Image (tube, rainbow, N blue to C red):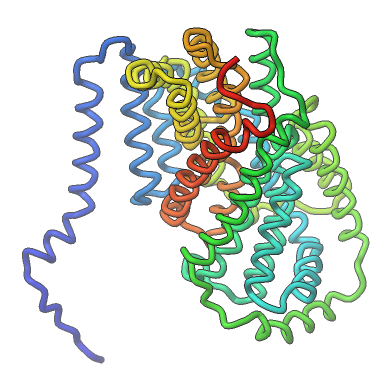
Length: 477
């Protein structure tokens, strides 16, 4: 047995050991200061406390000093404890549709994996696109983006997650260690996010924004007009995303050829496709089609949970088979994030931030457009994109009237960036699903996502300034 002697100075060892308690004491002190400080003009006491809770949770989510689920639970505790929302409202919000959609998505993904269907699909994809790591990465990225043109980006992420996970396992990539595994899951999440803003079908935020616009001003934005305006942004961000992925996390596998023998052997061992695979595959296809064509009327969560019920009614899985695939930590985290976002909205904290920043500093059409788009892209990292639109769009209509700006332009400024959430797992289910794989850390997502957010904001504003006038879209009425 060898004995190692730590020769570092005693003061350094004590500082390292005391670092964690010091960190928590510092965060607690900051929190108490924010709660006890004089309330700024125009901000309610509840809003001040909501901002304090939000900042503490944000620090914990980014630093990772406690599990994501614990931070979500902390939000659930502090919001009613400080009187930001009532206990009844707080825990009712946890039953938000997005939480149950995530739950349904996890169970569906588990059923696909348990049946062996995802393995079969993944192995076939590997055999077809596995000639090089870059080709495989690009195929996942483009597939996620293009599918999100025509169906909810959340549904695309749920559908592709088990396939990407199976590919990562087949390559023997180590969770949290492999750059290539991070690339695969970033490609999944970022492809869904970017593709999700291309049309009305990528999510409910754009139809919601246009509905508010029409109700308040009588104006509207047509499907093709929106797509023509946004498509250059999507193409540029897909290129920028792939470039950033391959530079930010250098590919650390020499090739995928080493896995070919294993993949071919596993594919052969699977034999012919069996009834369970057929049944699960058909159910998944029906669910995806329902998400595409009935998602707006029935709701994504309703469809997802209906599919889950069908799985058990048809005895395609048992609960014991499926429970290992359900990441309850991510569900708790997402529920806590929704509660926190609702607290910011209902307390008036989010509105106060918008009015304080925009009202004082931005007075020209271009500066208002830039400010609103920046506020939208930042807020959507913390609260639901529907809440971002509900908060910012009514404000933008008032600003448009004062500065003679076309309100449709400011609708673009809010609705498009509200879909470009790259930084945190609580920002969108696509990010949450990627983090649930354990191959991607929140810190990785925050760093890479920050660069993507800035790039998206810059490209969006450049498109609005240089490209939109060419297709007849201008700032003024």
